[in-house]
Image 1: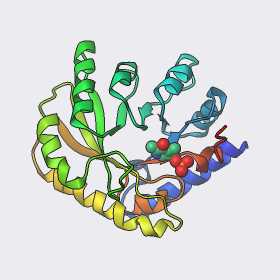
Image 2: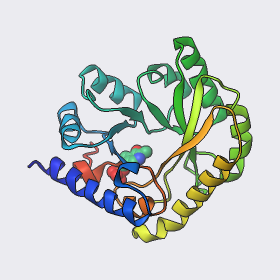
Image 3: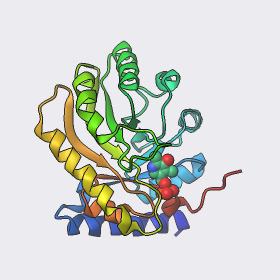
Amino acid sequence: MSSIAENVKSIKQRVAEAAVRSGRAPEDVRLCAATKMNDASRVREAIAAGVDICGENRVQELTEKFEQGAYEGCPLHFIGHLQKNKVKNIVGKVELIHSVDSVSLAQEINRRAAALGITQDILLEVNIGAEENKSGFAPDELANALDEIAQFSSVRVLGLMAIPPICEISENNRVYFRRMKQLFIDIGQKKYDNVCMLLLSMGMSADYEVAVEEGASLVRVGTGIFGARNYK
Ligand SMILES: *Cc1c(COP(=O)(O)O)cnc(C)c1O
């Protein structure tokens, strides 16, 4: 077995065990491979090994690999920071955009989706660690943002996403994952048009097990699957 296949197998096992520890079924949590900087053949290997989703960070990289057929047979998500002028290259190509961090970005996605006659599913990114250089809504901005985004009839908000502060010890991020789960529950109890709190995207290579224990339904794992990225 290739190392990618071995890694996927062991991560899926750990995700499944963490799901059971959180009182859920293994299939309630999906593994999204964070494929940035991995070429089409490595992406295909991960798909063959059984990842549920491919998540791409950069529009240009996604477009190139898309044209190479890298994601065939696998749902594709966009997980990175998205600039408004690149929205047109993404809408309709991806099943879910995890990283919507402003009302104006949601509005642009809505505009492009409406032009295509589709509904684009999105998550709202929350800056749960209140980090200055990180994008995402502050928790107390979410209610107002949802009031506005609920009016965009060609986007549907399916949940929340977060990237907590980088940590050495995964246990230290448990508090952030818990806060995300609470926000998710609180929003889910309100009634907004075009909003349905189904998905909680949190947890990466270093902390996905803790994230799943605290309620993640999508984990985004890169290095754990592919090994260290080679930033040139
Ligand atoms: C790269 C990336 C990940 C995966 O990070 P790893 O630490 O390599 O698992 C997850 N989410 C986003 C948004 C990313 O950009």
